Every structure is written in C-alpha cells, then in structure tokens.
Image 1 (cartoon, rainbow, N blue to C red):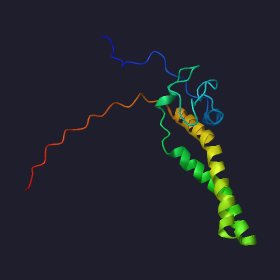
Image 2 (image 1 turned 180 degrees about the vertical axis):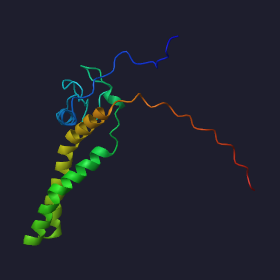
Image 3 (image 1 turned 180 degrees about the horizontal axis):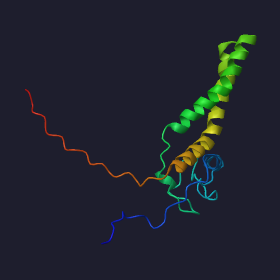
Image 4 (image 1 turned 60 degrees about the vertical axis):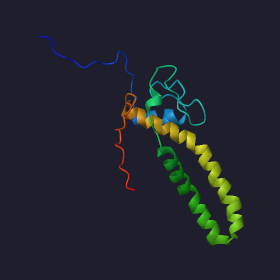
Length: 147
C-alpha cells in the first residue's frame, strides 16, 4: 500500500538565514534569500521573482506597512527637534512650514524604499505563499421594485 503525499513544488526558494540577515539584505535592495538579486524594478515596485535564485518576491504583499513604519520612524526623529526649536526660539508658523515640511518630505522619500525592502525581507523570512486564488463573487439576486 502506497502512502499518499501532497504534491510539492519541484524547487522551493530557500528562506533567509536569519531575521536580521533578511532585513539587512532588504534594506540594501538585495534578495532576502540569496543576497544577490534585486528586490525593486522601480522606486517601490517589487520584482516578480529574483533573477538569481528565482524566489517569488512578487507574491509578498507589504501593503501599508512600509509607509506606516516610515512615518513612525521619521516622526520619532524629527518631532523632538521641532518641539525644541519651538520652545527655544518660538519662530513664526510660516518658518516652521518652510523648514519642517520639506525636512519631513525628504526624510520620508529617502527612507521609504529601504524600509519597504526590509519589510519584504521580513515577509520573505515568514515564508512565501502561492498566488492568492481568484475569488468569485456570488451573484446578487435582482431587487424587487417598489413603485
């Protein structure tokens, strides 16, 4: 009698060595599995698969986590100086806007990509899923007209 086994993929991508290794590779725009291929094909667009180890990086969905982490980190670094400047010199509001809005914008733009890479590395460490199946929506019955 043969024992039934589920169908397995012929090749499965290797998971990163450790959590910190995956995060570090992601920050440097490197594949969290092999450390050689690139994660991004644009500013924030994740490649479908690694060109070196063929890990399916495109199936990893970072969604809103990278912007959240970016705002959290930038806010914790830049809000103390904002409050310190306000308390020490009390500059007019227009000067705050001229200085701090560009500072926050530039910091967020510069940190968003490395933070998204780290998030993709973290997700790769958690494991790869197959592409989500298409969900068929149930047909809605027609509503009776109440005239």
